[in-house]
Amino acid sequence: MLKLLSKLLGRDLTAPRVPTVEEEETLSDAQILKEYFSVSKQNKKALRRFVRLITVQLGVEEGQRLTTSVISHLGPGNTASEAIENGILDDGQRRGKWVLMQVDWKATEEVEWQANELLTVAGITETWHMESETKATVPHALVEFSSWVKPRGLRLLHLDLGDDAYYALLVSADHLEEIVQAAEEAGLKIQESDDFEREHMRD
Image (cartoon, rainbow, N blue to C red; front, side, top):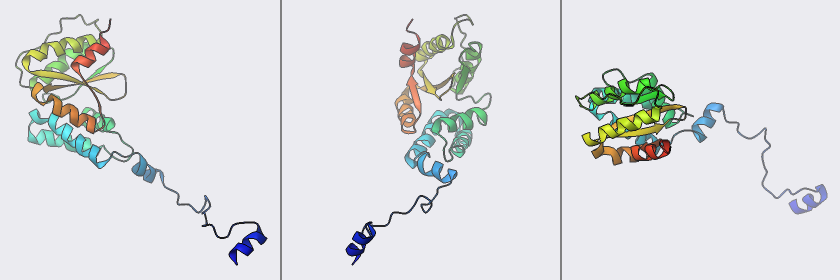
């Protein structure tokens, strides 16, 4: 009967009905962000592990505070990079407990004092003094600092948070591989010091 009616009416009544655009469920902006642009549970777990690893020298209480701060900024639509920037740089780290260096691309004079903050947290009593003139580029200053810390069992790791500043972490060489792996699993762009030097010191 349906096939006969279909021929008479000129349309297929046996095919499943396709809802019109108006009838389809309309997702709110918040639902779209949550559904399509949120960090996965695996990424979130890796980000939590990454922050705990880079804050271990701060002690349990301070490390937990920064971890909680970072994860609290990982809402729908936010990236791991944004959570790091908002949770550590904007709301988090304090003088004497510095964990992440942030230097504007042309602010070479900012490298030395932040480098020494990182050394304090790492338990290094020596003070680093930049040999390059302040007119040197930020990458040159970072490479110089990186070379200075290597014999002391430390490595400088570089984060790309998506803007024109330089971000660097000072970590133990013994934990380097684990930290890099956690960063990559969290969706962060991270670069070891040798790769950073090759990229920025070509001239």
